Length: 506
Image (tube, rainbow, N blue to C red; front, side, top):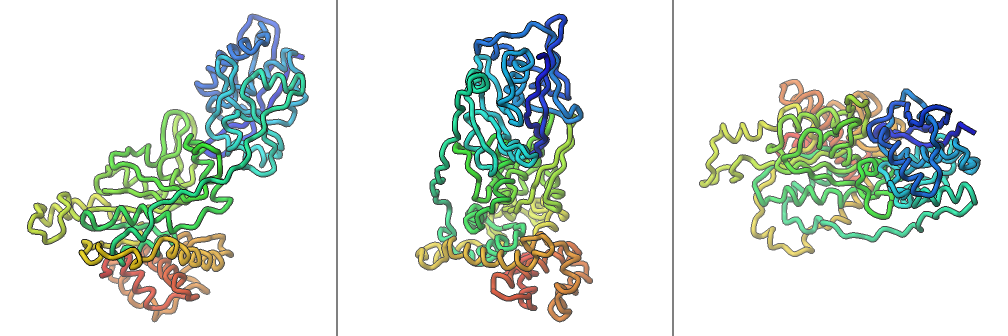
């Protein structure tokens, strides 16, 4: 037999596509040709596979070898095709009967000694195989736990090409995935540790319940960073669909923790203010990798000292904040990454970071305005909650733990509010108030009475509030009503939402 075929999976972003790895061995001068839009790593596979085959005790066919990756129009990236290429090549040369691999997806990178090494993106690859109707996959032993979280797929692992050959030729059993061990409960920052800042705590709770973006402005030591770092502690755990999305993104980025479990806690990304545009939104040579805004999908992206970020990096966030996804086009191809994240900004009032009116502040009013103007109007217009924090008082700092609510208490209210919103918006296929489009909120049956929105409409007519801001205030009003257990917002809810939006709350 001079032809063989083995199944594999190629990734474009986090979307997997079933790929057929074909091998044809013909008479002629010995050579290896790879077609099907391979990248550099795949072109180099010819040398890796040859060394791995020889060092695994198999005979290398001295013939003209043509390897084709179907569909040929789909770009192929990475080294996950190595093991499938080796199996197809040995099958085409007659060394292996490939019947045991029929309908089986084979993934893995080969070392020169024949070892099978783990690869990035195994979880979305296995998910794509399951969606295509494949029920069996073979993965590197280092990716077995990760692959096993996909239901309905029988996962087996290999640690070497020799083990795969023994399985195909003699039926030697492959490695079973490790047993699923519950993840240890790790304690994190708690809201009980935040002194005072009742307005900041209320803003954090509203943002968590509705999925709203948040900006915290105030002097150093007021608790901006502490509040932001505790936002994940009051967010509900991710459901199965969201956990798969988040885990797939971290798998593609190679950031999954040991154990390969689904990530159930909302992710928290806090890049340094020197972060570049590609590190925030995604980039890299060939196919763009996910950036911080995508790694924070279904979680929190925290930009501390936000005015210190470059203008280009901040402005690049505007599109993903609005649409919940980001389109990255590069010379090697384009891809779309999900980016439905909660943005939290923290900023001091001026470069010297002294409170307004402090005798030691060296900043003029013009300097203060210039500093905060680094956060552009269009970006701030997309931030639902904008509050100014005051310095913490001594009485608040010395209060005992029993005087403040812990994260668990607030999280219970957030979960109840989110459930109310999910029930209300089920017909619109939305789960959070922040996700509901403005036109739905302005039409029956969700349109609020004129007497409830009179102040809000006055702000819109005067030009002090944009149309986008109008919709965002309405969404926050629904969130406040959900937190307080009411089925519809009243005038006080709209007023509080307006105060949180404009930063005028005291």
